[in-house]
Length: 194
Ligand SMILES: Cc1cc2nc3c(=O)[nH]c(=O)nc-3n(C[C@H](O)[C@H](O)[C@H](O)COP(=O)(O)O)c2cc1C
Image (cartoon, rainbow, N blue to C red; front, side, top):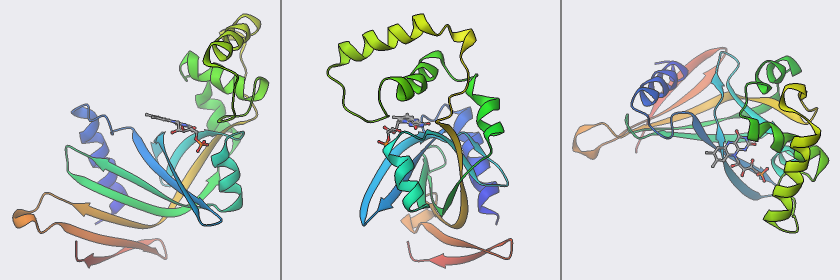
């Protein structure tokens, strides 16, 4: 079984039934022994791996720079399958973000602008009202059709090395749990006690 093909099929099926997790993942990172996890939009699954968009002003970016090993979790409620995907994160070329950034919702584009002009992502602000006022100022200063992809917007890919699947669709509650390890370009599977 190719776990990537399986994840892609499950994701497609999840989209068809409007599973709210269909386009999401949960990315765990670790720096100096301190774990952290966040929800991200899973942009694409390609032969390269699992593509995400992040901003380089964010705390997660400095964590990735210090330690690019990561675990991504996806859970599709309709297929009742969980995948834990371990690997290394790498930045994709600027063309990946260039091609997609302009298609982002307007609000997301102005957030990216705000990280460079108002304060880095996740930094503190005086108040929500103040932030909204300053973002409205950005909207006046930069009409949407004149916006350019900010240098801090990045596309990254998690290149999978180990994938663990837990499939709950089994009789007698004896779930099917398997670990897939990528060796010489091929996935090798072992069965685990769930
Ligand atoms: C449904 C959902 C989707 C999200 N998608 C993204 C995303 O694609 N990229 C991103 O940088 N943050 C996304 N976020 C916000 C992150 O979870 C996180 O709060 C933010 O990136 C700051 O993370 P950091 O402080 O660990 O850098 C999303 C949050 C939710 C709830």
